[in-house]
Image (cartoon, rainbow, N blue to C red; front, side):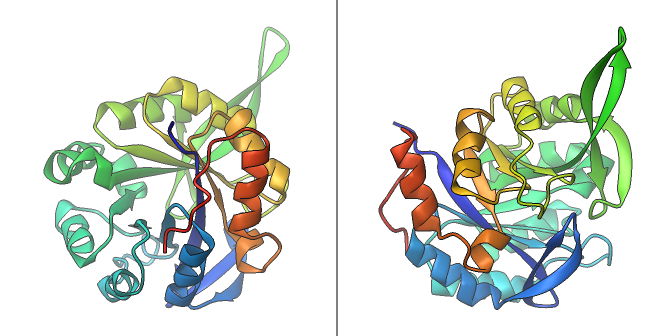
Amino acid sequence: MKYKRVIPCLDVKDGRVVKGVKFVGLRDAGDPVELASFYAQEGADEIIFLDITATTEGRATTIEMAARVRGELKTPYAVGGGFGDCEGIGKMLAAGADKVGINSAAVKNPALLSQASELFGSQAIVCAIDVKRFTSLANAAPVDKWTVLINGGFVDTEIDVLDWAREVARRGAGEILLTSLDRDGTKDGFDLALTRAVARAVDIPVTASGGAGTLEHFAEGIIEGEADAVLGASVFHFGELSIREVKEYMAAQGIPVNLGTTA
């Protein structure tokens, strides 16, 4: 039986965890290493750190933070933000990260995914995809489509997300971290149609991100969104829900989860 994963996401800016709505209006949420240790004790299956200004400010995520995290916990973790070449990815993996997330750089240079997966293995490469929904008319009926955003969500590439997801999988990425900008921080629930469409388009794991606000939302992301993992941020950081509560609720809905701690 393959467990469905619950993953807290720590958006890091200037060495602190922050959280906003639709990538703006950031609030301080604490020290990244302390929060990671707490989530590990709660039973997080993985932890994701995203340096949310690394790409826009043209700098790489700090190696020091990754090393501190590895020294504090055994829970698998991924780091994303500002990676533009295999050298930087290799340094982060050497510092202790289990996976590295690539977003804007992969869109600008898709060959980076192929090179990185070949060098480090698909299991170490996560392609993060930030998405915005738009509705068009086809035969007088509204049709939902989604385009890929880069540079922290500020640039719309107009690339169709399903086309990009298929290319990401073809180039060897081990999984996709899929974030709906429309839902990010709103607590209105995941974009289930988006998540389901991407999950059905590829044969690699998809993590649903953006919008989780209730216990029901997490279960819906798995059952209706067909995701392999669900991600939360502010609901965990500000104590509205615990990872344990989420996993117990999911288990009650018949979703296979690991209820043991991973610290």
